[in-house]
Amino acid sequence: MPEGDLWLIRYGEIFLKSDYVRRQWEKVLVRNIREALPGCRIRSERGRIWVRGPVDQKNLQRVFGIVSFSPVTRCPLEYLPDTLISVARDRGAADLRTFAIRMKRVGTHPFTSREKAVELGDLVREAFPHLRVDLDSPDLELHVEIRERSCYLYTKVIPGAGGIPLGVEGILVALVSGGIDSPVAAWMMMKRGCRILPLYIALEGFLGEDAQARAERVVEVLQGYQPDITLQVIPDSFLACAKEELLRKRLERFTCLICKRRMYRIAAAFARENGAMGIVTGESLGQVASQTLNNLLVLADAAELPVFRPLIGLDKEEIIRIARAIGTFDPSTRAVGECRAVPKKPSTSANLERIREIERALNCPTGIPLPKTE
Image 1 (tube, rainbow, N blue to C red):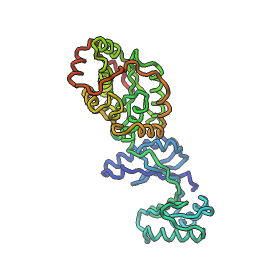
Image 2: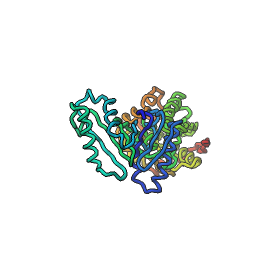
Image 3: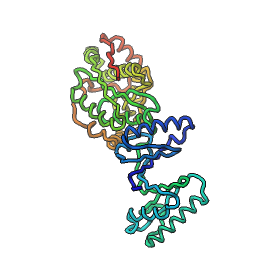
Image 4: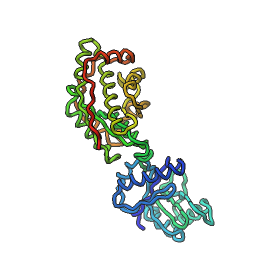
């Protein structure tokens, strides 16, 4: 069988679960792979998933739960020596200097893994006398998996997205601004098995259409990881009213906190309406005024649902590296107008009771019109 017709897919954390959970998560992972690779045939066994057919590697690399995958050559055990030499030759063994045999074995055999690895290593050196063994950093790694009477050979290990299968941990609403941080936060919770409902709150009078368009482009990138993801947009005029009162009362420094608490309430209501169990935000401790430890406490008070902040301990450079790797960096850095509501000197250490008191005194409509996802 030519390499590329059969692919070996490996998963990690799933293997550590109880038998019942493992079986359920394997089913979800297989379903997600099937959606990413329409037309391919898929079967699974403990610790391994096999895909037969033409594989789109980029699509496969976006499937959460996959640790790595390889195109493999399959042969019966009795043909292993000849097949191994053929694979080594095809991978350029004649022009390389070092090699290593990486052996795995499942089942009952009259030999140990070490014995078979030594035997195969001797065969390779006999066929290519110039090669020497280097187990640390060989030019050619020949991987051999013997599973009962079948053998699988490969030389490439392609990294996957890792994490756990998308969908096994339920649904979360992600507040997506379109900047660098929020899509990375959403992606990180996808990686932990959560389906994401991205929500953009259009602050009427303070954010332009270009900001919403940026959020839409970012979510289009995330569709590569969660194909059914769709950005929900909720226009909101509350801030226009609140900003005017805060200015009049000389409380403008609290604008961002009042605004974000409003966003948390909208997100929580949207989550309850759509069966989500929490909210995801792109906040990182100390990054801006509203993200001090004190102010994060003030914000969380308004949510009424768990708030997940997967970026909380990351610095900006770490977040940017992830954004580049997953493809959201370029659309996130597209120039758009800044939010015109941000005060010159925002509060960095607000008092929760004081913020509640200010909110109660605001004479602004608080109703939340919510679109419901399909």
